[in-house]
Image (cartoon, rainbow, N blue to C red; front, side, top):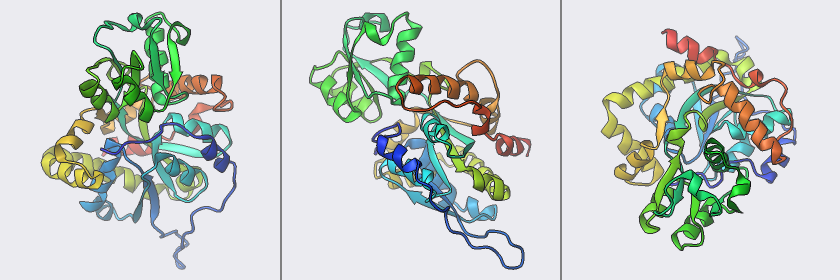
Amino acid sequence: MKRRMKRTVTVAVLAAMLITLAGCGGSKDASTGADDSPITIALSPWPGWFFWFLVDEKGFFDKHGVKVDLKWFPVYSDSLQALATGKVDANSQTLSDTLAPASKGIGLKAVLVNDNSFGGDAIVSKPDIASIKDLKGKTVATELGTVDHLLLLTALAQNGLSEKDVNYVNMTVNDAGPAFITGKTDASVLWEPFQTKAVKEGKGKVLFSSKETPGLIPDLLVFRDEVVKNRPDDIQKIVDAWFDALDYFKTHEDEAIKLMAEKAETTPEDFKLGLDSIKLFTKEDNVTAFGKRDEYTSLPYTAEKTADFLKKLDMVDEIKDFSVLFDSSFVEKAAKE
């Protein structure tokens, strides 16, 4: 299955975020003044985001009377740039990738949690490494500043270690996987499909995964502030359509997986493997996630901790108020229906 090539904001994307461009052009109804142009939602390769195609092709946008134009970006970072520069109204992106533009003054609002990584990101090690503590002094590779780097640091911290206790190598996932397979690293932090390939071809094992860090890696629907302000009714309809698609999936799983697998250009069997590595969020899961608690299952808490991580790497500026990043009203209304 195609996968995000880099799950963090690149320097080029950050530079683009500082460019002020006009918003997506829309047309207004002459009689009402309402904007009737399609809302554009960007998406890229990730198991949970292929559900947008299910929403569209099964007619749930039409059911709720909202015009939506899905914009496909094979390269994930291109979708981040499209949102930051106003070329799309919304993007499917990680929480960590929402923090950098927000710290640069770009107004964004997360309105929906699509899913959490639930095993899709993992530390793959040689079989003789029995625990995270055994990584001390070992060579471990992952890409600096990515969510998988954060996963590594979290795993180390939970076991009384830090990055200084391992021989850390900054390496893209495209290189970290082959490096493990050829024995150049003792462990690599990888996401699917690189993770499974490393286990099979490199005779490795999953030492630690995102299953053990619930809420650490959430995938979101993020809108530009002005769209949330000017078109809240349409956003509510989009959120409602999303949950309709999740309900449809429960009763038509084989059909839905076949549809999404075709979009992903993979087999239904392989697509299902990808789905098994994420946790799709229900209405109730969403309401809980938007709540404030001192744990990673809370978006505000995760945002603050992730921002601290990125700030130490000089990848974000200070964010004084994390609450402005989230609008729970849409999932709360959906949950009451």
